Length: 422
Image (cartoon, rainbow, N blue to C red):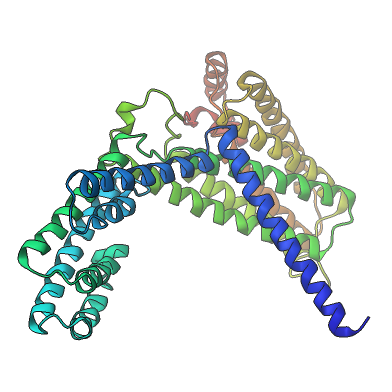
């Protein structure tokens, strides 16, 4: 087989593989929409609402009112079924401004050029295209130029006919906004829950992988760099969480959905949970950065001994268990069992940390002690943040209060009495 034939066959195989991947992705999306509530079903609902708003606007203006350019109404309604009610209102005002401007300028240009389509386009389109780039108009700026095109190409530019265009636009805007606000108004709550669950899940996975490598003593600079890369990518989850919070806040503005809906996802945990996770992720990133600094031929730090790292791996495993318990509690899944795992992991982590701290005091190699001390300090702070999540029961509160009154209470347990609820 010639080289060209081999390349053609490889290209064909890659093309079919791409088509299959796309079909499989669509299938997963459809199954997700059918299976239950989630972003896939939300997308389907918003799409159907937009289509319904456009059909309703056409039925009102084109069929019932017999408007001369009824296209303007469904076109506007389709565009205004946005991701949030607030955006629908804001987009409606922006679109109304640019459409009025586009219609008036197009009518004036047609009158000035005595009905010349080309002449009116040369006058209006450069102006409206430039106006559409104004940041205050957002994504709606382009509708000014397209409205001008409709008016010019349709050839109707008297004041009465322009008034019809504006009336059709207003009808479409009212229908689009009303459909979005009154029929299953979008309330973005799930994404905050999803991102909050991603943080403990991915943190637990990183801690477990890291612990396995340290315990087997087979980890390399490449492994450590991979751990640090995964730690840095947790920052992307934090940014996604912040974006989800913004969507949640925006979706509640001018939205009757919180009062109209009787079911749906519960409100997300308060934002103080985000701040705790920001600190926890920072400590986890510091741990992976220190381990990466002790690996390889050009290591910046002297690696701790194998015995220390094995015990540190056990401590990382308990931290992963705390993260897994937090994920289950956020998902409201087997809360009693998750609470028991949390308490066992917390007690075991305290025990392991105390043992490692005692061993650290006996180290005689200052360079290795520097890395060991940094790992211990960051793990202590990570565990302190992780023990801020689970809400203790009443008996545990009493136990914590009793221990807090004893002299010398501190360490990881010292933060327990200050934990915030979810």
